[in-house]
Amino acid sequence: MLVVRGDLFIRDNDKFYIVGSGSNQFYKLVAMVMGPYKMMAWTIDKGNYNLEHLEVFDETMGIELVINSDKVSLFKKINIIRKAVKNADCLNFKLPLPHSIIGCLWAILYNKKYVVESGGDLLKSLWYHEGLSYKLIALPINLIVILEHRLAKHIIYVSKNFLQEIYPSKARQLGCSDAVIYITPESVLAKRIDKITNKRGFFRLGLIGATQAGYRGHDTLIKAASLLRDKGYDIKVSFLGGGTADNKRRKCAEKCNMSDRIEFCGRIKHSEVLSWIDNIDVLVMPTLVESLGRAVIEAMSRGCPVIGTYETALREQIGSDCLAHARNVQEIASAIERIIKHKDYALMCARENYYRAMKYSSDLTYKFRKEFYDEFYTIENIR
Image 1 (cartoon, rainbow, N blue to C red):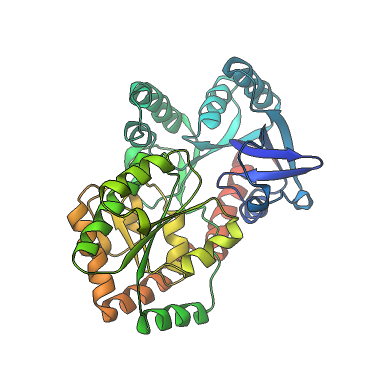
Image 2: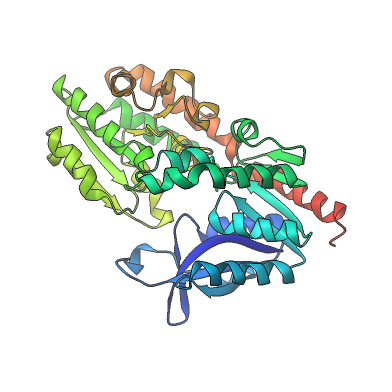
């Protein structure tokens, strides 16, 4: 199996540092599901990355990296992917990632055996991204993704129903999260309950997402937090994730007189994310685009109260009373206020989220996914 997703790495001597949302836990779980596999890997320059905040790729997992430089031109990259697809026995693509879109087209042309993992709404992601160029390419590329879903014979959607409605297909399919979530002991929930019960001082609101992704709602949260501060609440906002638009978010904070209340945490190791979640009071994701909500599920597994949006797949994961419309600052502020003002309600949210997250535990999703891939290998006579 060759995995074509566009995973990025920084090469430093004999080590490869994982860039982006990948992690050793995720790659290991994929190997448990699919068996030993090869993965196209693209190396980038170190740039401003702090290697201490990145995970070193574990080469003992039985995963072979097919190393390529990300510096090459788009034409050369397309040709590299073409050759890799042509020489592979079977493949795995994660749509709508750019490398997977390209690879899937070649797989269709070469009549290859492959599995599509559907993980996002491309049209919304590009349309709500900051910049006119993204809007110009949104519709034509999305039409390609729609076609690739319709022509696929095997699809795993990361949502229960959300993406199935956007990218319908008659393929053999499964709706199952690919988030790496392990069942946490009830002592984690007990700590959260204690944190809520004995809360004193300021409330820390958290958001996870790259700051240049305008659809994530950083500015919306800043404005909502400003409304709450004006009502007398002691509020701080913490942003987690790399990004190139921190200054844009700072300008919004200045306009809302929130500059001293905003914290940019940047990128941290995946193993440190749960500790960061434990340190916030409410995870607020006022996003216009979300097809899985990995960060939300992780927060839920820690018993953290979460606020999501009606427009996204988050409505599949959290209670409707914790949803708001993505661009409605007042609605989001009211949802936050309900949690921080009423401890009994916050405690109910914590318990509900903790137990809901168990449905997304890797112990459970692993079984569903492995069964799917075992049947794929059998149907396609690969093993």
